[in-house]
Length: 99
Image 1: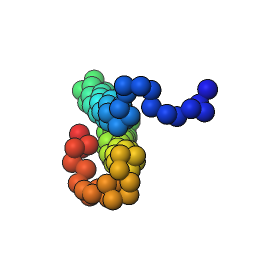
Image 2 (image 1 turned 180 degrees about the vertical axis):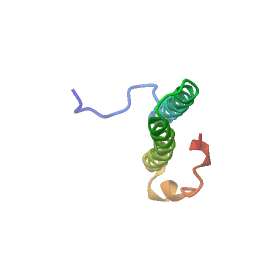
Image 3 (image 1 turned 45 degrees about the vertical axis):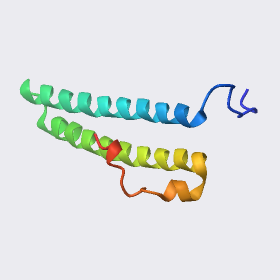
């Protein structure tokens, strides 16, 4: 287990990593949306305003953290595809991970 990291035949590791980043992006976006929805639901049904505020702020914090995480993931995928020069190109522009 774990010792052989070579790409299986016919599998492009870059595509595989990019697909996983897409899945992570989707999951993090869904988490944010559902937590935010839960806060709104609690607010409409008379839930504790302090809890509602914490959930809303928490959803925003999770969104920000997810964007940072995905930015680093993109950096390392780019690094795996072509070295440091590739990883540095366009690092500041991570709009594709903003949800």
